[in-house]
Length: 415
Image 1 (cartoon, rainbow, N blue to C red):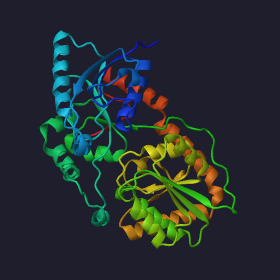
Image 2: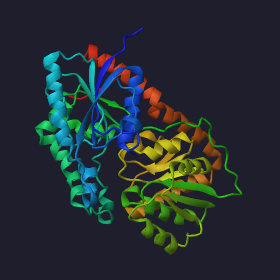
Image 3: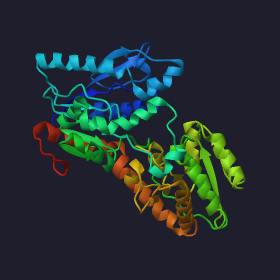
Image 4: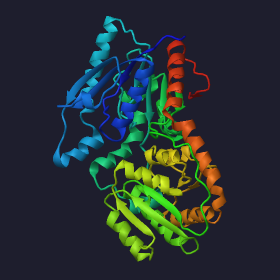
């Protein structure tokens, strides 16, 4: 029996009660703590109640950080200015532990998921894993006119690649890592200028459960039920989906349910009205997770044409319910969704995208006997790439190989 590893986890954003990155990190810490002796370096706002976000970690080192409020809250979320304070605290703690005799088998920095933050473990001679990373995707040129970055801080995304090439702190963070984890091949391509040593593809998140039953054939005498779940913002492609549904509805018996809220919700409703499909498109707004799960269960196909999707939590959720997918050839979903379980459409410009999405809808709607096989392939694929247990099994193998050797069998190497 192999000895239980001692793992130091660096995770400034870690909270069961918070959505997105913090919840995913909680799941990582929880699973690792069941398999290893884990110490977590983290940071929370004043008043954080650890009892509401429990973990089996052997030790939690928590620092309190400030939080911007009111109209600054979005900047606080997007730019994470408090990470700088965490960085120096964690780096000082690491140096102290090195002086005392560092006794961890491996260090793993789980977040921030974004590629723009340096690691406090850089340059200290430690063997560390970093990631899974995602993001820093650009808008396809044909969509830039319709997708302006309204906030100045969102425009800073354009500096990410320059920083990977020229920022010594960021370059060394990735270059020093024994292994870099990324959600899809595009992350390795983006980080190539940093001369990373090893790259492994690993999903950042995953479904809470996989139902285990494939979808059955859809009767010809009822509409094919298409579903979108996500924010109604331009990059999610919901308006492209509406335009595609309008085209496909001329020859297909379909309905379209849209779950989510965002700054384009009214524009999407107006578009459906203008195109004459208000009767088959239903906007549900933001729903509780339990109700979203019910919609996954009752729908037939997941239509998610996001063209700047780093990873795609809702894609994993839909696949966990056995839904065939129609999505973009860009970002995380392009790696997760295979031709066996979905249709991939390249977003070149809005008119072309809507037309080819409509063709994908038609191909499924006109051959409904494909749906059970696509559903089974979606279930198999999500188990392969996103089940928590399979990822922890892989991660422990990476830890052990990294701790004993710089050579990782089967990993991708970059010169």
